[in-house]
Length: 291
Image (cartoon, rainbow, N blue to C red; front, side, top):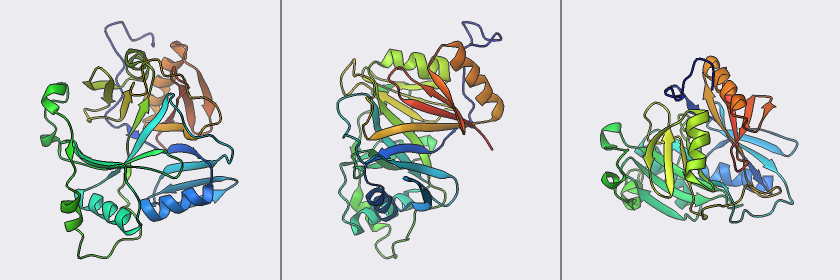
């Protein structure tokens, strides 16, 4: 906490925050690049030395790092899924069409009211959500979980009807972004002590087993849950999964966040693109200033 803050002044991240690239460990780079290009529609931006960067033609959305000896993830903390947010329901329909055309299996599809989403694993089991938001007028009271209700089945047939007469685009829309990241952790309150009280996210929806937090009133930039059991251990070395995820901030906000991380005694290290801060389960968050 900086000298200008008091116990009544919780840090708040700016509404301009956006989620940046997600970096994953994979076991076979050729296989993963092919999957993300063909099944998901991302473009390969560059590849060298066992690493690949993919996106929608602008900033990188995904980085893949090959470790041929990495083990499958187990019942520990780490990635639940990362969400590729499509700019419209039509673009989500095209994503669904792409999955169908490539014979890609999904693990679920839900209508959350605030958004529509398709869930699937990549070849290493890393979780992916393909989503499109509804307008904020449909979100209701995010702070009241009883008002939100549970997810409904996604109308996949209705989505596909939107694109049944068009040719499948080769790539996702250039407006596709990383919408949020959802993590398995070992304790909700301990997670909030880091992500809310140090990092500065605001709680939007709080459940007994999960919390959804954000900047600027968004429904969530980050979800944390204890669905692998309270007390789930930290991420072990040598497994596939999340290497780090990224938030992008104005330079002054990134500098202030760096001060908070240091003052809190949280584990951190310098990264070529900014500050890499680690939560209590060794999950890494890259804080990057706008370029």
